[in-house]
Image 1 (cartoon, rainbow, N blue to C red):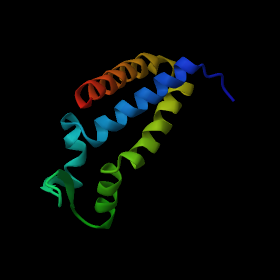
Image 2: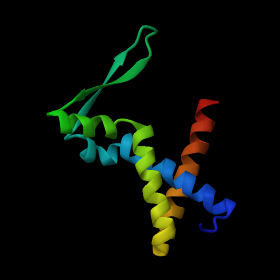
Image 3: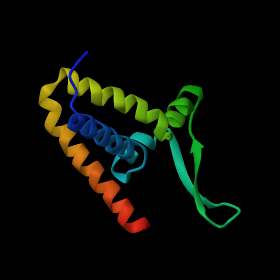
Image 4: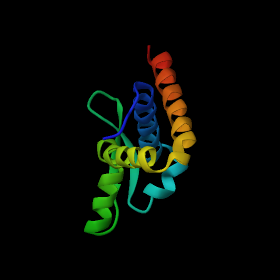
Length: 115
């Protein structure tokens, strides 16, 4: 196998979290999602606003849209990409570190504003 320190594991986890969030939720990457689905916010029974999706196109396009709208699904592929970069592209470590710092900042910000 390969040697993985606990700090590298934390960096990989946080980088995976941030890149997954970037792909699935952030406005800056909406150009990736727009060809496949559109998001609407509708109130549920309790009045909370929830995300609703209108998937576009045929079966393949809708399948890709469903994949891109699912943070669990994208997280698997992003995790594989992150591990692959870590193992086979050492020059990508600064990018992974940058994503991890942004991921940690997002976690901290969420904790501060939801407490």
